[in-house]
Image 1 (tube, rainbow, N blue to C red):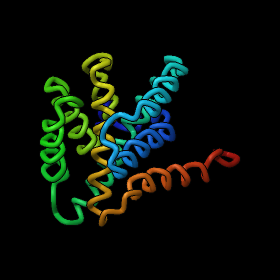
Image 2 (image 1 turned 90 degrees about the vertical axis):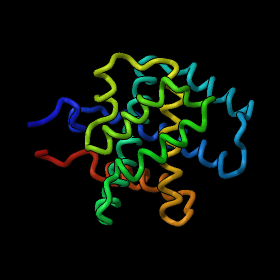
Image 3 (image 1 turned 135 degrees about the horizontal axis):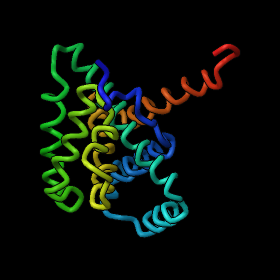
Length: 186
């Protein structure tokens, strides 16, 4: 029986913008810029202000798609080594979240852990989250940071390739673009 949280029922959203934002955050971290760059913050605020509600929802869905795709990749890797992705990934990320109280207030950690677990069990994180009501403003930064933490963990797993997680997504998008639009009769 199909779940209402099956990824086949979820919108992918604006994955291109989501990966651009995530990659920008990762590069800043790798460059040692852990504080907020005022110019970068202003540009981000201007970008968000230019978005309409549909654009914001698409970006939100895109970040959830990143989380799903990263957890799906991690699940595949873990299964090759007879490991459980939930057991291998979630505790480490939750521990990291708890060490970042300015980004992950204690009340949002269970939601972010739930997104990871939903994704790790093959469910759509945005459809899973929708069961509990609308996203809150307090969940926006933690959601972005969860995608960044996953990407960074993947980059470390493959031998400190700081661009692997980004390529993983952009390569998937390129394959999708090559197959679009569908040919006649599809």
